[in-house]
Length: 82
Image 1 (tube, one colour):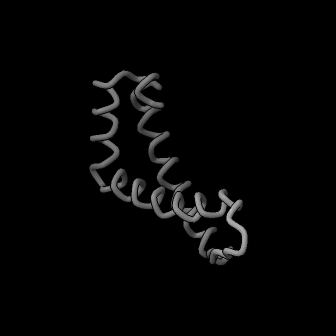
Image 2 (image 1 turned 45 degrees about the vertical axis):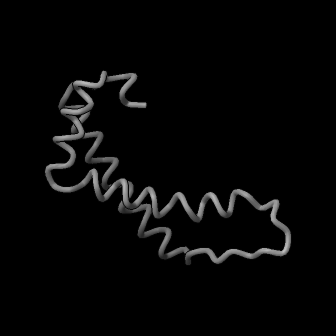
């Protein structure tokens, strides 16, 4: 979605800035980790199948990390005047 707002050239610069500390890679990994259980839980039409879910403390830790990365991305976007 950012590509629509910033354009591809600026988005590549923003991604480069964001990944200097490895944050982009870590953010992608974390989003992938959160996506799989979400998709399983969202498709509850499978009867008789119970899926394991993470403890609230684990989810909270992941969401706190996600928040940190999103704040860093916001800082970079503001720096680039977006």
